[in-house]
Every structure is written in C-alpha cells, then in structure tokens.
Length: 361
Image: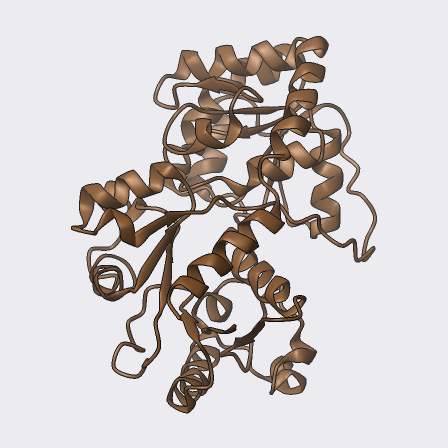
C-alpha cells in the first residue's frame, strides 16, 4: 500500500492536532513492512516533521514566508499527483486543487464541522472552509470522521451516503522526548489551558467563571500556546482583579508534559470539538480533566472527566471547584483517565485507517 499525503496542513501549521494526526499516520505507515507513505512536501516549519527527510529539507531555513512554502509545496504535490506512483491519496485539508489531477481514490478526513455550526466566527469568504470543503466532501471516495459526533454533524450538513463514512478515533501516540529543555517551574498551584483562544474556545466565559475561585484558592491559570494575550483579554483580567494570576506561555512538547503533570487540572471549556486530542494528552500525563459536556468531548472523556455546561457560568465554576478543592477527586480522575486512555491506541487508529485505504484498491 502506497499512500500520498499532501502539503496543505504542513505548510500552515507549526503545532496542532491536525498536523500531528497526519504526521503520526505518515511515520506509522512507513514503519510497516508492507506499506509506505510519502509527503507532497518540500518546505515546512511543522514541529512534527523531520526536515532532513524532505527533498528540499536542507533549504527549509531559507523559506520563511508561509505563502512561499505553500506555493512551492503545491507545485511539488501536483507533480507527484501527475506521476501517479501511489495507491491512495489523502489530502490534509480542504483545498480542491487536486480534483482534476488525482487518478486514484482519495480519502478525506473531516475533523469537525465548526465552520458549518458556528459560521459567525469565521470570514464568509474564507475559501478553505465552506466552499472548498463542500467540493472535496462530495468528491471523496471515502470519508474518515474522528468521532461519532463529527459523523452525525457531517450527515446533518451534507448529503453523504452513510456507508461512505468510517469513524476512526484519534489514537494517542506516546511522544518521544527530545530533552531540549527543562520543565517550566510555576510558582504555586494552577489550572492548565492549552491551545488557541478564539471565540468558540469559550476562554472568556471560563475566566469569568473561574475568577472567584482563582482568588479564593490562590491558584493560577496557565495558558499554553495561542499567542500573547490580546488587549481585550488583559482588560478583562484587570477588571476581575486576576491580572497577576493568569499567564501565557509558549512551551515545547517536553515542557508541556511537565505542565500537565503538575497541574491541578486541565480545563477544556470549548463550545465544540471534533475530538479533543488534548484530553488524551492530559490522561497520559495524569492530569485531572474538567471540560464541556458538548459535541464529542463526552465521547472521548467517558467517566474520566468532570463536565459542565459551557454556556453556564455557574456550571463551569461548580465543576472547577469540585476538582481543585478535593484531592481525592483529583486522584480518582487521574486513575480513570489512565484507564480511559487504553481505548484510544494509535495502533488501532493506524490499522483502521489502513483498512479504509485497502477497501478502495
């Protein structure tokens, strides 16, 4: 089985669940004796891809603009599509540039329906979402969704044959430590928030709900990723009198492991997630999980999390206090998280994905 992944997500994403998913599949396939995978990629700053393994990896440091990476990578992937030396094509995002070129079956992974469910949070003229997405969904030979929730959402918005869709949960792949840096030492107890903070991530309401508890229990909120706090966020922290209790960090994967391990809890207040890979990261690192009761999150978390209504400030506060004020509750969640993680092995994800590929050839 020869699989070609394209350049799209690796041209634009340095860190993130989608690029990690495809990188894990790529390396997992190449570790097998009877299968191989190729990336339609020349240049990337993605942290999950080894640049020295790319055809132009030695020159990667000279291509700093995202637009140039995208242009060169697109040209190279088109060339590979025309060569046709693969059995299955698996694009990594929704740009339909390949539709007139691909002569073999192609598989599409739909990670979520966030643009369809919350269009008010996105520019209406964004070509990589609604319009492009519709084209590739309708033309795909098979579709993978990463949760039952995402499959159900897909069927609501698109006229797709149910038999054309396979649900394959993300599998957690144990990271290989690079030992590039030491743990980040946080003074005092803290709740951990990981990732971007756009509107549907519900960060603002979480902070409002948590602020009395931050003051009551003298705890902090550590935000990893997402960039520096915006002026509006800083104004909110000042208004809530917690400006010295909220901190934003940029961390390596190794440092993030330490932050999970030492946190009172990981908080996931998102209004919608197609899966929620950070939940598995928290489970692996023995971090209690507190999260929304919406979309796919209960499907992933099972009984190993404390849930809240992400639209209800009191519900969020009650769930947080259940955990941060109770050591026994924290220990119970850690134990349940370790058990829950066993349901999401990367090997299962890989084998089920390969079964989809083989079904098309």
